[in-house]
Image: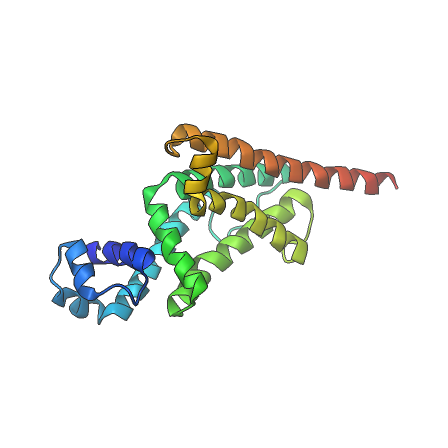
Length: 213
């Protein structure tokens, strides 16, 4: 596991081509020969890093959203509560956890220059988590889960949280924060859940107008 963690960190920071197996072994404090023995080489290590990301995020998403094949919450109120809980958990991991920084760096490089590792991450995390959030959104609002509007809405929900990781340095400078710890994260949660509350309120208002017409 030390080799996988080292690869994740260095591939994210320096890129795949910019990282040698010798550097990975040194970072992991492991024998360089163990890379070929356990993973077949650097490419296999990249695949293992992608699988680690999938397992990590599946565990966190599962706690907030339930299994990807599970039924949606029984009532709109329960679905809305789950959306708020999911946002709070996303902030807690993506914005605060140091491990998330390494994961996001790795994923951003894959998004810029897609490889088979991105295919693994998309199939294991991106698509099922996004689809699950869309299902919960449908239960919360009545808007079809697979509609273009719902998909875009869910991307904006996720994107507002991700920005606080990828724009971390700019956020801290502009906010005058020395770090983004639990206190700062609570303020991010308040802002993102406030946005979600406004989005839901606008749907309720539209539904009310339709009901009166």
